[in-house]
Figure: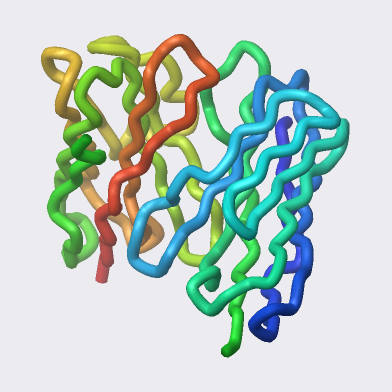
Length: 110
Length: 114
């Protein structure tokens, strides 16, 4: 069964304090790994798709990386507006279903 | 480009009552998904449509949940009768085909069953 585990469950940072979120996964053939951001009361907002080990993608202060067993979301010099829950999901080969982790709730204090 | 639209945004019902949710996907997106997100959890797929047809409904509680997608565009998800454990946010998402494209989510419908 495909599984996604995210850590930590919650992370509190000071503005400008860089850190990383972890997403560990087991899947029967990875088609893609997705990162989403979810603000309270809203649906998940797409951030990145990673397809193969060694791939990296960047967007503003966020950088996502992928290995054969895990993905990291690096946040450089975060701002309070980066506060949200970050969700990781995997899509297995032969399926379009996304299997999500429980998410990491990030709080960035000014 | 308009995003995924859902209504209502909030719904409160008593157990054993019925409820229906509506979704309008992004124009041109052939694939539509319904997810259930319980508080503190990630979304869980309930059903996936490709145009009018069902691709995956393996996690849909078919004794109480039903869904349809008429004319390959709008979709409705129904719960009848509702249970307390159905309290959750119901998210609709859509994507282009073929598979591998990112899914875009609507704002969700928050259901509270009392």
